[in-house]
Image (cartoon, rainbow, N blue to C red; front, side, top):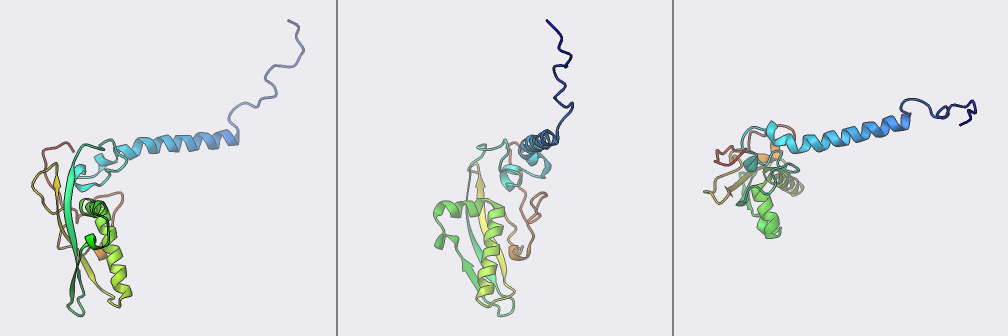
Length: 173
């Protein structure tokens, strides 16, 4: 072979280009997220199959069976009025089941009820969830502390919410 005097790879700059660095960073973040999301249940106290904290997008899907019922007590401390709100009046039975068994969805519904009653002219209503949940066909027990006003409670996405009851079941964490 005859040498031409031009090295074969002279026209390619060594190292990563800015575009390659950005793509590499994006893919690294994506893969880290894919690793961290399924491991979230290990960072919450209690039984994740019960509390649902960190359950979604985890490797624990389809390990449990839950059923439950729920209604909400709306209390106006100014007038002393109490209303009982049944989600069955507004939602399909499957959606009501999700409201009953998932504390975060119950919390969202309580926020919706507070907003509705504020629009009706009741500014400081309190909303309490009253219901019970059965895990793996065990005895139904409350999943949400019935003494906690959900409408004035914060939801913590990345740490345990103390108003979710803990239950000691004989299933894996």
